Image (cartoon, rainbow, N blue to C red; front, side, top):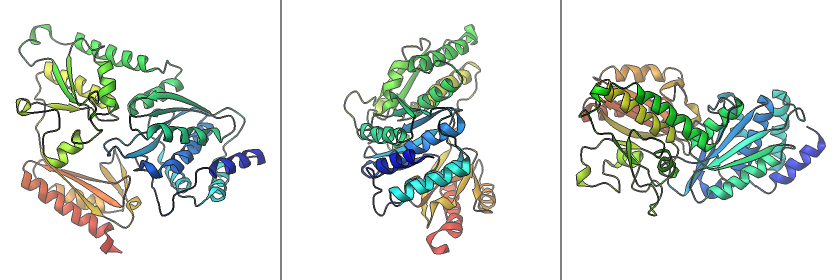
Length: 400
């Protein structure tokens, strides 16, 4: 890094001071917090994304979203060239950047990391695709991200607009494979794949098995908005979207999977006539998940599989001194650290018929979330309680 680059970073960073008393940690959800304290973090992640692009010599993605969180929250995450999540090897650097005390400390960390990673400047320009969801805070945070990206000389920030997280990840992957990376191309690929699947269905078995209607809770977010567009491409199925956000509902307020799971009540937009209905939830970032649900439902339908056995589940959480002490793998279903914790979770799970339990650190506070399911409500509750006790023994505030 030359003196000009250092000067640009110092000047830009001085416009985004870190809020006092705030410590953030990058996880599978990226950084998440109240949107009012995120500008500095998003600016710094913009720098990280540009450096990642220089390191990989590829297009990187930056998404501003907070998924299930309340509308006053927001977050930021990075998509690697493959379309996957930011490599875990860079997460400690993300933490260091977000928590750097001031501009001088931030630039010192960047200089050290650039040297350690042998990141070359001037060989190829960095390019970052930027996306956001429908949260009101998204526009200002997007601007912070752009300024972070632009503080790296030659870096280019391309705003792809309001999109779902899977759309942005797909666009990043497509760009790096030399393919068209537009929203229209995304919809076309999904609809064509769905059409190919429907061509395989047994013609004589399609009638009277189940109606071709899927009802989706849009959670008043970007997912409902995008699904309204996608459904025009899917002629083989009727999609009924509730809580699409068109009628002014508040994102994730009284709607969505988290609300139903935690509160055990019917979401807004549904009533007595909907009792017994199977729902797909189209939350703020899961268009790909919803579309996959459509595919999976059709596959199981036309092959006469049972759709699923609804196991009873329980969520709870444990306050800990440091949530970053937990490291997971396999989509957050296996605990890698602390050593020995996964072994005791497995032992507890084995005690219950159809038992399953996993833990994951919160993205915004020092708590560990515990999920458990089993064949009865009592068994699920007991499993969750026993796993939570082990988490507390390993990591709880009383363990220090």
